Length: 305
Length: 288
Ligand SMILES: Nc1ncnc2c1ncn2[C@@H]1O[C@H](COP(=O)(O)OP(=O)(O)OP(=O)(O)O)[C@@H](O)[C@H]1O
Ligand SMILES: [Mg+2]
Image (cartoon, rainbow over all chains, first blue to last red; front, side, top):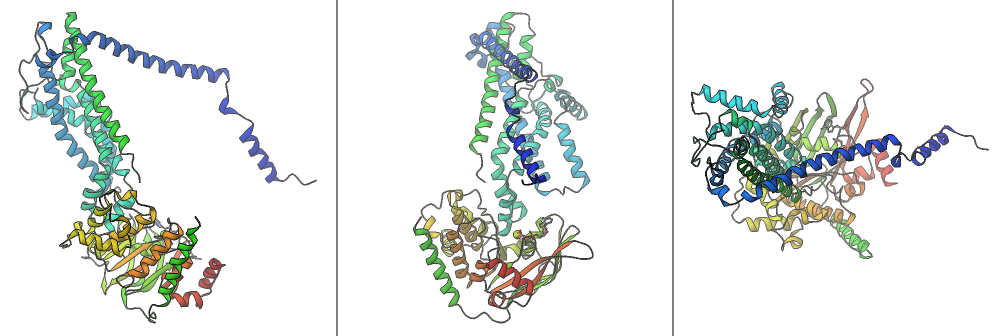
């Protein structure tokens, strides 16, 4: 009889490991409890969300009409609308985008394509950007408030002020997502460009950035949608105001949709709560549209390389 | 399926004839690039040491040798693509028509425009076929009167024109691997370089696509100087005028592996009468 060699023993052991344990189909009481708990958590989260949505829809649909867009806030709920808030949100988010997107993309391009990663200051900047994305929104409001005060601006609730606060809030998000998009562009594309005699700048501008564009767009849209739903920093700047005119410039006073919703929910009359629900539906619709666009861009550009 | 070997054979036949009919390779090359005592370091690690060889004008030079012996490293140092690798450093001198290309004041971008590079994996840009070719001339600011004609010429030289002339505006990603690689060659040709470096350009291609690239190289030899890294011994024997055999040896003092040039000569000499037993061993090992 052949000797039972160590090799044979090892082979046997492997066979045992591969076939007999059947742990993938294990159903011990403990794991069952765990699975049930997981499902339960999911159910709770989902049910809460559905309940909220349905409740808001039922509440708000009756007032989701033209008046919401065309009327100014009023002390009489049947005449009130969110026109300045909708326009204010557009103004602030538009300005935020103009301020934060070029700056964020440029910062990301510098860090990813040009900065020397061995230098301590670049590493410091990297760590800080990650930290900044975890800073509570209200801090940015305080920062904007302080900066405006230092500049001697008395009326703090102005479009640029809000845009600066929100811009700082989403800048780290834009930088991080842009860097990820740039990192996903294969090295070979850059090499191919450099090998025909293009400069670093030309390569970045004509090859790397266009290739990363879908990723950058996705990240930017998600960041802007976060800014759109944000109320805290703007409240701090004094965004909780009763406006009966349209914002019409960078220095104009403004209010935004989340603030308008907040203001209506704190009114005693039930009709205002209906209005708040209607405005919430509108806001959710816009956010859904933005996130949908982001997902669409991401899926459509699943790259071939 | 059944036609494949015949196409393959036909191209190979043609290639062999072309090779046989070309003029005798001179004993010493007219150097376009002179590599003198070159060592390349990655941080403190000396990847290749003391390489000296001349790249002959309008010749095909093959760099062969086992994996990790520094063929790519040397190739990348010939057009300063090594500059892009952090920690990479070149010592010694590499002269292009007599001028040291690592001298301060030499612009690596200018070097790369004259000495183009084709990579192992085809890497077309995510652009149309036309824009892939026009990219180089545009970014380098070449004076091109008629870009359409220029694109056609580059694609024709790369033996791709007939296959793509009706879909110039389509994405380059729609092409097969072999076509993409010829597109990359065309893209390199379009900036009218002097030298073309190719790092295992056929490594990801099937045998027929490989032979087409080889055929193309044989045709381009009259217009350009070509340096090719290959693991395919037959390929070196088929296309190269001169062959450099590299190997990696362990330094007994430090225990580190360094690549070095063992032998550099006319391809026929390397394959028929190698001077160094290591060359002989490598070649016969591969030929079976
Ligand atoms: N970017 C790098 N950083 C550090 N070491 C490297 C780098 N590139 C290559 N090396 C090392 O340099 C040596 C030579 O590598 P190189 O890629 O030039 O070999 P090669 O002959 O092209 O091999 P192959 O045939 O596998 O492509 C190897 O030991 C490798 O590990
Ligand atoms: Mg290599």
